[in-house]
Length: 163
Image (cartoon, rainbow, N blue to C red; front, side, top):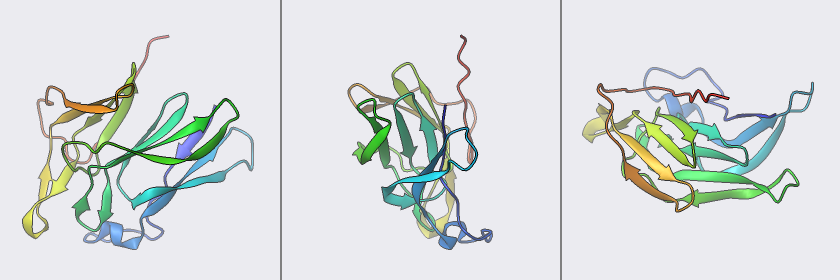
C-alpha cells in the first residue's frame, strides 16, 4: 500500500492568484513505514488544483491550473515499471475535451471519470461545470458521459468498491 500526493502552493493562497504562489511539479509517494516519503519524477506540466488518482499500477494527474486563471485539459500518467516498483517518468495522455481545474476524478473498471470543476472565460470570469468525461485506459480515448444534475465547481470524488 502506498499514498501519493501532489503538494499545493508553498504559501497560503491569496483570494486572487491562488496558483501564483507556486505550481506542483512533482508527486510524492509514501509507504506506511516511518520516514519513507520520497519524490517521484517531475510532471511534464507543472500545475495546481489538479485531480489526482491512482490505480494499482499508475498515478494520474488531470486538469488543473497551469498559470493563474488558466485551466488545462491535459492529463499525465506515471506508470510503475515492470513489477520492480520503479517508474520511468510521466507520459502525456490525450487532453480532455474541456479544460477544467478543481475537478474530481475516480478510476472504475478500466476507465477514469472526471467530474465538474471550473474553467475561466474572458476577463478571468469563472465558469462552473456539470460535465463528466470518461477516459478508457485501454484505448486512451475520451468520451462525454451524462452530465451531473447540478453544477459542481470545485469538487472531489471517491469510488466505493464492494469487496
